[in-house]
Image 1 (cartoon, rainbow, N blue to C red):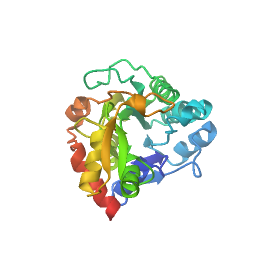
Image 2: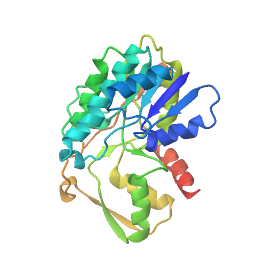
Image 3: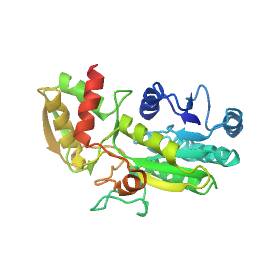
Image 4: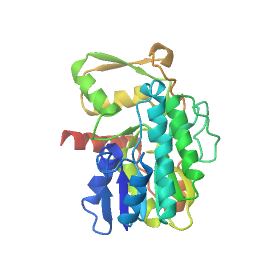
Length: 286
């Protein structure tokens, strides 16, 4: 298959590059904005057609949650308009679109893990832009797989784990929110699952939404404590409430995702969050 990965310089894109480096089955096409501007319809159509793309994995996104409140036009362009452009081009070329979405499409007021059919209720500009992106894809007429994930981290780029490692070496103590519960997701695990979806989904008749994160449920406080313990850093972590950590955008209080659908349909084994964190720390430490 010819597989196109957009946004390939991000955490997920670089994780897919790592997988592709040892893959001999497929022809991989890795692009970022310099090679392919996914907000330009003519450019996207030409690329997908001329390269005979079978599957497009859209890893491109505007992810600055608080900044999105001030840059709503840009957030919607990248998170909603662009996926719609990709979906339309995929439809015209009988390609499958795999689009990555987020737990933020839910309001976070649930008391049990969200299933794919739960009503979306985005609460911020970022969340609304991602929810709109899902609509653009589902209404495009293309064959698609939408994968919602949460709390993504990796050895690449900037993320919570790398921030905690830096602060853990610089500071004696940190206050971390303890009343927001979700599941960290190691980008390499998500990338591996997406490759399974790309290989096993029916390109001609697929219109599905799946949830994927690592197994388990913790707070940001628990996550931070574990990072410090595994790395043997002396930085003390103190729990605080969300109201004591002022940010522009309200975060979901509970955004654990139910992964039964993807596990049952594809037989995917999902690693426990702590085991994957250990793997990522090993990768960061080289």
